[in-house]
Image 1 (cartoon, rainbow, N blue to C red):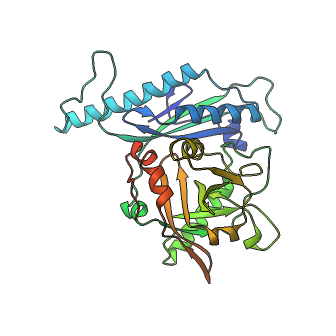
Image 2: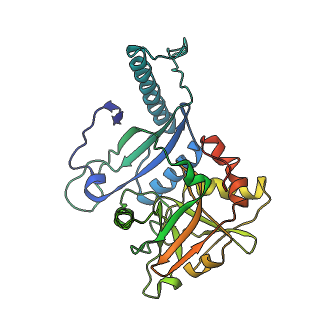
Length: 323
């Protein structure tokens, strides 16, 4: 299902600056049983990004009305399809208050807000009419072993450029991640088994001296000297909503101090525990990181990730105990 500027359609103006220049923002949000997960954190990041890019956001209540209407419409269509196939559930009908029951479903909402249409050239249009695109996608299933045993990651050759003006926000220009993700795909074609790539900031120095920033589509956490560490997102990278949730949860629920800093890749060799976070797959433990053909670091400790996942992964219906 796709909603473009309040209308059911799959087309957008070819002059839209989001298409031409990546001039916009997006959010990828988990929808659990019809409810937006961590909406407050996503909205906060949108506000931060819109302030930086000087894009006017729609009214929050109006936007939520559109999103919730789309979720309900999708649920209604699914229920009607089940009814037509003779597989409708007992409560698969619209309730008297107009809401549609959703039965333990998970979906992904992608929200795109661009600056809207404009003429040729980089200068902002004099009058801006931002485009709002709302899309619902099926939930991507992961292998249970990814959670139970941990995933294998590899250090990407593609580096993140330093740009403080864009650091933290989730803007539409994701070419670095596109290159890195296809680099990962190419590695897996050679019988490797990497589920995520580790991205470093750009540096002319040796790779082991480069700073770790994040995964291709995730943020990074690791335990070092008893501290839960995560790279500081001040020159490049994305301030993930799940990252923010972990930073808030760890001190209050686990009395665990979180340290944000600039960490060289080499420091991960001394970490006792590593995991990635993402708004969809939540907390995902790391079993190994391959640096190059002759160097790999392995991790078997899961204490902190188990404690956090008991709270965070449970809400997203993911496995909560890792081996």
